[in-house]
Image (cartoon, rainbow, N blue to C red; front, top):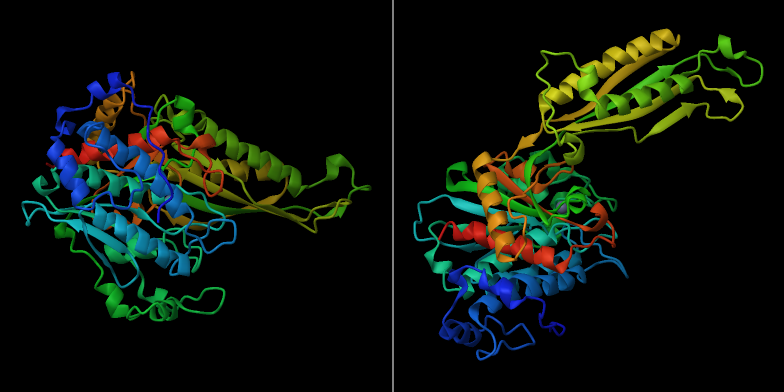
Length: 494
Ligand SMILES: [Zn+2]
């Protein structure tokens, strides 16, 4: 049974007045919803003589969403911390809970052969392609309550609000929410198992990948009473013709929205990534006997190279030659379109009284523009060699990993932008035209889904930009803003 849900008191009558007239419901709808059991899970009763339709919708989008985020955040395998990995006991308890919420929103539900939970409503035109809205139910270890869960709960709330306003049956196309079973990849170190299966990009060899206990994906599926055959996963692939787009609401996991003072942003794309390993070889020697002017010190060279990486990515326009089509936008620095990180460094023999013989370090380059990422890589290689020659050390650059950027669909993005503006207006926010365009430096299910259909993403402000941590937090009004924006987006399809 759910814990008592606090009643909302923060919406002012002046804000209510600017909610669209579609929310002005007859009392009958409210009463019917109650009789129909839509609110049986809630310990409070919406009284028809004290709440109007508009307030009912806000209760669903704000209070109920927030309450459900807390409830889902308690569903854990960890003792005193949140951990819900692929096919774990808690993941099945979460599936049961979210399935109830989907049914409460009027959706038909099922769990597929890899453990994704689906909730679907048919539109008036059954030949129209389906809009999929999704995010993931799994978490990292010692996770926050919003990463993944927010996107699922906002989607359920938006559809429940459509149902409460009597408009669910008026949708012109099919809407399907998918709560994906594995995005974080904690158990099998392989991300996007659920969304990759839906998009048909899951490699068959995944069945034999083992977790720490030695169980394979196939073992885990069979133990959970799934078929566990390669064929059963292949059949999960959706026909691209049957899907008209994918939308994901997700916490930003970065500080940009907070720094701009805005609750929501539209995602322009998910950054592509290049991972490099740089090896610098010098001449090992005694720290006390080799004069400074005679040294070939790879550590000092590495330090200069690391600063070069930083400067190159902070001021790319100062380095990259004209004609390479590098046109950084004015707000590039704040939106983080190009980010470079040296996160790992090691030296040999790593002793305080020895000039090292070798230093290796990693470089992670991310940009939403693949051409720019390539230009940065080439420029880094060129300047690295020059620096190493000048310092009389030898350097090599290994390309360890490359992933192309995913670009969100401009049409979906403009609809999301309009939905955000409309939601902000309804909430009484003054600067309604200010919808930042963001770049995601982190991976999401939208990457896998982009192999199936066009994608769009909405980012939600999170405190301090912190995620993958129990201190991860989204303000209640921002949860409301996200659910309301999604509702506005869906109303376009009514
Ligand atoms: Zn996530």
